[in-house]
Length: 452
Ligand code: ASP
Ligand code: MG
Image (cartoon, protein in one colour):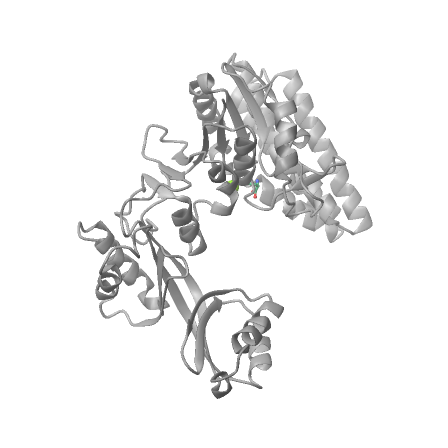
């Protein structure tokens, strides 16, 4: 039995925070903690910026960014250990940073950055943060070790967004990692980073550490995967729009997925799916308020309310495609959607009528090109600056009158498209962007009212 504790970049940005993380690892000792860390603060951004500078041939700029990363980690080490930085840590950090500098020089010299080199560079952040933390764990006299996740996190060679091989990860974890995670020890490893079958470093894509935590938790049959961040879980609505929004105690995986798709930013559910598929609960917790509220996401457990939470996203563009030829032409929609597919424009919501189809696309979709393709067989009306407001709840569809209450609560916010039913648990409304916040607040009041 093991418990995975994943900490994001904002949770390991300062020495103070790293000490908190160590305290949390100490509390988790009876559960055989596996600590998965992101890079500290904005280190990954800086690494990628350095890679881009080097690619432009700006060796000096790249060096400066690398020096900044070196300085930040040296300062963190001093904050944690004062003048007594463990020699082994200094050596390990310097090893990673020297390798980084050599890679950047190489890229700058060739003026060429392959996806493979970019991953080698980007992975440095997690290697550094875990070295620091493992040294802190040792200083606090906790038993444990630094573990190179590349020994187990097998991926394909799609650098930059590598695809994990879950079967291989499970085998490798059973052989290499399971014997190391035991009650009374803290094993420290990297999020985001993986390796191909030949041991070449890969990354899972930006924000990939949550995915790493879920993959490792699933492979080890963990009792819980904890995602520690800077909020107390998944909120009923964006607290910047609704100040009285609160963390939701329990969410189903499907609810969390809908919320993320429509703008909730806490976590991307696809990344926790490996854990929920194995019925491992995933909790989202606040590193600075460990005793506070949190959200538990389970495969099925529902929020228990018809309206669990709201999410909204803007700007989006509303397109209405009208064609009399649509009338009795089989395959019209297929032809229409193929055009969007060709331009990589993903469609979020769709509503069809006899001779027209309305749909929403990202505001930055290639509109001019899309219209040029579509105009020969249809009339296109484009309405920019819209917002999608999504109401999510497992019991939404089974609760009589919930749609009516949602629409009534919308009041005089002019609703331009309604979509319900694709997933039984999501009712989405498209409104003008000026109405987005008002609508979210009204729907939140409905969500909080006992009758909702
Ligand atoms: N450090 C990586 C990033 O910033 C991965 C993560 O934080 O999840 O994208
Ligand atoms: Mg992150």
